[in-house]
Length: 317
Image (cartoon, rainbow, N blue to C red; front, side, top):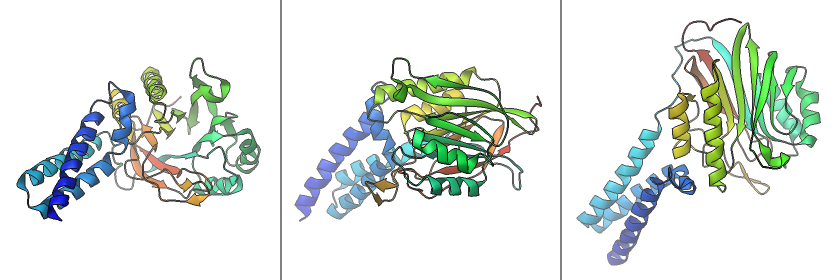
């Protein structure tokens, strides 16, 4: 039994070291970021392997599995960098942002409308909105959100007046796949803020996803107003591309540990395993709280972020 366990541990060490090493190459080969997206699972596997090594009493196996676990736990800890600053106790809420990937096949839009109405967010960023979704969304939300932009894919609803808006497209793609992000400039009680709703490509399209993150980074770097970026990034906080986005834009990440996908498999509810929906904000803002909601017929969990001013009042219009 012990001999078979030693063989199993040896194979696990070889595979663990290989997969961990491949994840470090993601900046050159985007497809390998899939490894980094699953880094917590890899770390948990390494720890389990270390426990098995202890059972074998093989000191070399114990040392190697311990090293493997330490490397992956260290990578997780390093990935915690870039989190948004915490707001001061009892800080006043400046903005509540809700982001929700509805799922193209969602047939429970009435429940979505009820949920969004109850969250009382100031601005709502929706992804995977279809033409069939649009009418009931407007019917249920327009009274609370009189301002909106978008009719497919990414749609934004706002309580505050929209002073300007635009979109970021993927060049050369058909209309159904072209839209990456929409942005709006809103007036929040006399203060100008830009808000961006985004839906990045899936990890199964790594080159397109890399292009999406580069385009989103460029968008943020060219803006001059305080900015909030929210949506379905299809990347976890441990992914090389999302860490690079955070580092280059200097935006603070609101969601690290709230798992948002998948909330369903076929027609059955399941527990989510990755945090791919997020909110980012510039240094003018701080995090009061971020929470996840129920699936409301989607395969994603919605997230709601309460945002405070991190420092003095922003410049007025």
